[in-house]
Image (cartoon, rainbow, N blue to C red; front, side):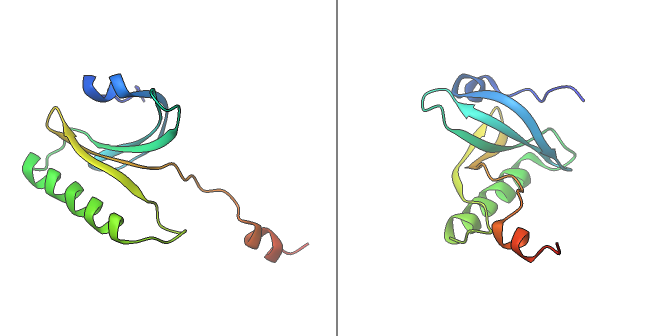
Amino acid sequence: MPRPRLPDELAARFEFIRLAGKGSVGHVLEVRERESGETYALKIAHHAAVDPEELIEIFRQEYAHLSLVHHPGIVAAHEFGVCDGLPFLRMVRRWRVPSRTAEARAPR
């Protein structure tokens, strides 16, 4: 699959590292913020068969819900925005890794 194109405004802020996932309305990219060097998950919508205003509202609601919840099992969202008409969320980069608890419970 070709690498998803970031809108120019986001490409100026973030360096693409890899595609971490994709869904019906967007992609999740692993990116590095150019200014801080921090890595994030960037969820960005792609052009879909969904009304653009409806898609923006879906992302806005997701951001609102994620910003209310503080739990180690739920990813934290740091930013909601719209670039070139496409909504995005900047989130803590948290990929699935085995936990120490899961390792401790594994049969030996």
